[in-house]
Amino acid sequence: MVKKRNRKMSLVIALFLLAIVSTAGAKIIYIDADVSPGGDGQTWETAYKYLQDGLGVSVFGDQIWVAGGIYKPDANAGNPTGTGDRFATFELKNGVAIKGGYAGFGEPNPNARDIEVYETVLSGDLRGSDKQGLTLHHENSYHVVTGSGTNDTAVLDGFTIAVGNANGSNQHHRGGGMYNNNGSPTLTNCIFYGNLAVLGGGMGNDNFSNPTLTNCTFSGNRAGLGGQGGGMANRSSSPTLINCTFSGNSAQWDGGGMWNYNFSNPTLTNCLFIGNSPDHNGGGVNNWLNCSPTLTNCTFSGNSAGYGGGMANWENCRPTLTHCIFWGNTVSQGGSQIHNGGGCSTTVSYSDVQGGWPGETNMDADPCFADPDNGDCHLRSEAGRWDPLIEDWVVDDVTSPCIDRGDPIRTVGDELMPNGGIINMGAYGGTAEASMSIGTLPPFLPTAHWTLDEADGTIAYDSAGENDAGVFGGAIWQPTSGKVNGALEFDGIDDYIRTPFVFNPAGGAFRVVVWIKGGAPGQAILSQVNGVNWLCMDSVDGCLITELIASGRDRGSLRSQTVIADGEWHRTSLVWDGAYRHLYVDGVEVAIDAAPSSALESAEGGLYFGADSALASGTFFSGLIDDIRIYSRAVSP
Image (cartoon, rainbow, N blue to C red; front, side, top):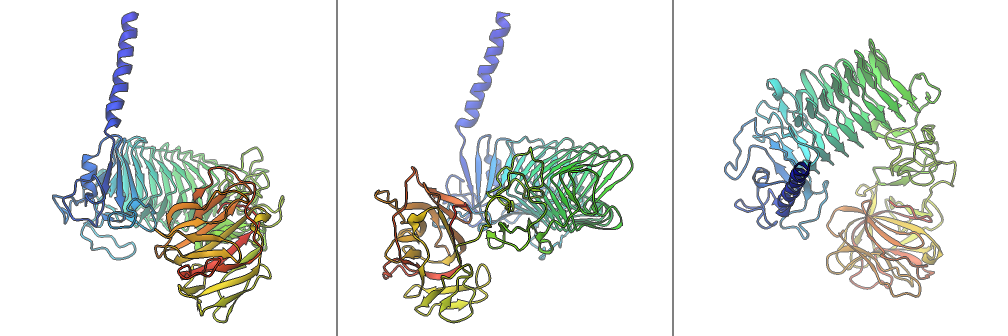
């Protein structure tokens, strides 16, 4: 017994030491398509030019940081123009996290990360011969990425995977964008676009592959040649998908968005299926042969098929749907929303199904989507609806019946107040983008709102109140150049807007939101007459700061490390919650006070937009300002 115990202890120690050795040398490997070849990957200045070179030297515990650009699986230092080998693929490794979206060498902050601004594309277009749209050629990669044999420590984060073409034989006709055979990697913030396969245009999962996908999008992928699963095909595999979108995918046979086969039981939460269309069955999802997927807070709209515009089930499939919405899906034959073939049953609860579905917790009522024709399935609300176009809250003249209609014993999750204490149905229920409830608090209206959509004149009108403002210095209206419709262009010399008194920052919680494009270090965005700068840029790098300080205390400015003077549109925001100052850029909190305060300093003047509180030279804003909102409540963007 003692020998066995000692042997077991020795094994534990050996494994522990192995883990130490495996992670002790963990490093960051840098990749940048814009650098000259010959680097060693140790810094941005000496980054590898080709992703394959970084993958080749990576070991367990490493991270690979990839700058925006296009990367192809057949290219490396030895083959800078590529080999044309269609079998070449970016092969994920256990314990290695590959992250895209970095600014890279030559940028003011090469470590800055924004997956939209610095789009990082893994492309199967080996010869660079594809046209825009879904135009694929026979020479494209069979699989742009593979995750076969991996576990959840293999990570891919922040990439667009595009134009793979799995039109070969055996496994090479599955998963044009990504193929997993007994692999379960972790994917976050990835887009699968314009990929083609026979099974799983965007992704193919085989033989007990259980990847986890969060915040991923499958768009414009196709399963051709009699294929199935335009966006994703699962064969004896059960992926987990959270906050994922399937839009505009197609299949020549079944499963426009997703196809599940032979004991595939995926779990989907807060997922959206919109505008997917196979030639035959299962517009959004098609389940075939002993599949029992679980869907919670998912929305199916605008999908079309022969049978089952939203979902079709065949041969002993038993999906479970909770808090889901099936509305506006169409068919040419039968089962417009959900179709059950032989031996199939679908358990539906607390859901909205057009045409009705058995169960006292279900309903058949127009969900009042915001703009389903353009892919916006947020629920309309008189208390507040998130608008992804302007990235802010708006109010409607109607409230969706799907708000506060989920299971009363379920938590509301991240739903903002007012939320009625009951989770919403649909893809945004339980998230920070859930539409608000009219049942507990007054509508979520701004105190003042200057849209800056005027075409001419010297007045900026307040659409929410009586705080119309004067435009000075000759600022130029740009009716079609704003983030939201029009905007006002400031020259950085003497242009500014002045409002009458709106409110005193010492009066309680509030939130200010301003869209900007341009500016330079030291310039102001919003300030108060006889007060201080509420939103401005520091004089060194152009990072967002606020100079509003606590009453009677020398706390100083709150400074972020986020550069906003980069020529891109940014939604800047200041929130005072009664104790802490918060700064946000594009909906992300970038600074917060380290300790609470009792109140902000009092000021009774009007507001300046585009200049500091003293109208000092060098502080006038140069660029575009749009859609300024002030709320008398502290709600985080």
